[in-house]
Amino acid sequence: MSVLRCQLTSIKALTQHVYRVELSPSAPLVFHAGQYLQVVMGENDKRPFSIASMPAEHSRIELHIGAEPGNTYAGEVMQTLQQQGEITIEAPLGVAHYRAESQRPLILLAGGTGFSYTWSILQQHLASTDSRPVVLYWGARELADLYMHEQLLQLQRLHENFSYRPVLESPPSDWQGSPGLVHHALLGDFKAQLAQFDVYVAGRFEMVRVVRDEFTQHGLPIEQLYGDALSFI
Image (cartoon, rainbow, N blue to C red; front, top):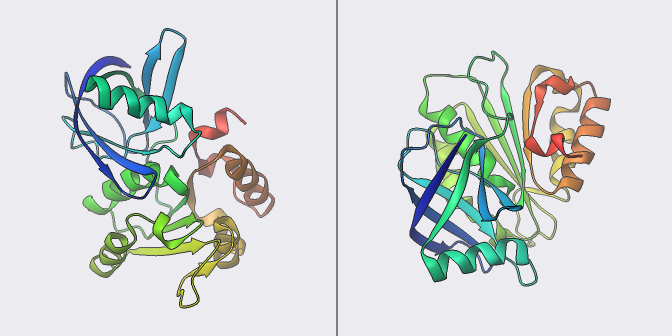
């Protein structure tokens, strides 16, 4: 793990409350797809965020930060970036990173901005020569919350081994994807075949806990379920 000073390169609003933050670290960051960093706000105040960029982009760090009103945890980080133009980070962290050596196909399961974790892994997999199938389930409340929806549809058209399956809790009347909860949609498709996959999950702790409990009940070996939240629940 390294302690690095990072300069703010850009902030772009992806939705009303989600921002793409690009940072330039003081030294190249070597990490695995799916790892995270901690923003050092104080000696005893370190706040984790998944690294959304690919390991090959070691001089550029991308974060997806959801800073809804009342979310001081993320809001204070955004305020520091906007006011000071730089932050200190600790990275890389996490053991739930991409397993390139595995022979099993991948399922990526994301809730909300947990997508940033799966986005790094997806990019790494599609940029490699690995032809294993990869399926991404991304759940959100409304279509506007799927802030890379069109880009993912385009990637699906370009890569035969990639399937994108968006899920909305409050879908519009013309919605072509699945309605309801994202892990229910996944179970509806793969409940009987879970043991054949490596499953990577990121989202709220409550969601990850339910995924762990229900997926292992349906035959997924716990060692084939990856998510750093699992270390805390």
